[in-house]
Length: 226
Image 1 (cartoon, rainbow, N blue to C red):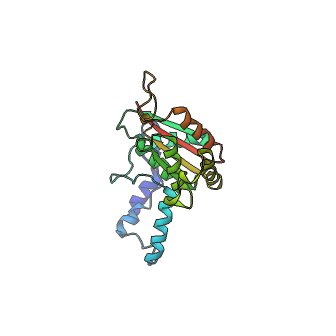
Image 2 (image 1 turned 120 degrees about the vertical axis):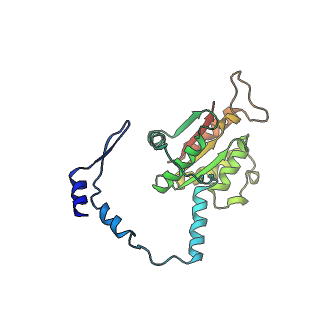
Image 3 (image 1 turned 90 degrees about the vertical axis):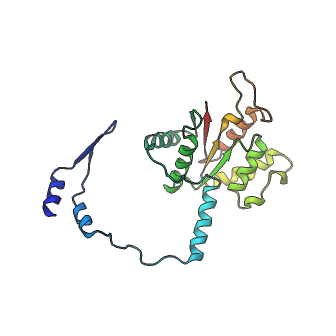
């Protein structure tokens, strides 16, 4: 074992990563872990079930309506994730464009979860434009995810859309939030300039996004299929 540790310490090169250079590791202690077979138990007691349920509820509130992580998890797209994270660091919005089924939504959801885990944002909200083709529905979904009233909140409580925006904008100012608008192709005009049936004029949605972006520390990310 000692000889193995010395060999690993003397030669830190492990492999070459395409596009990133050589990978060097200080992993000379690995033989010790391998010999012990089992890592020491760091936690010997679990939180009470009631506390765990409260934590799960708070986590669901923070993540809004984000889709669940797929069973195969998120593998092999770390560069795309890093590029998108850097883009949102310098800009208030970003768009991912690609063929249907290429994984745009999965990338967006994983980015949102990552930015929450790293405390870049406090809250996130997810709206699929396949389900909400008009601005009223979009704002209604955002309010239910971002406001304390939750599912009981509704745009219908206000005399007009402008007044309904105000509590959502205050929530964005109070808690830096990331908004994911998915499947934007459902409301975008096609190559001939024709808007999909029942979809509101895209200018109305863009005006809503502009208003929300005026709130401090808010970000919007969208996915579009081509």
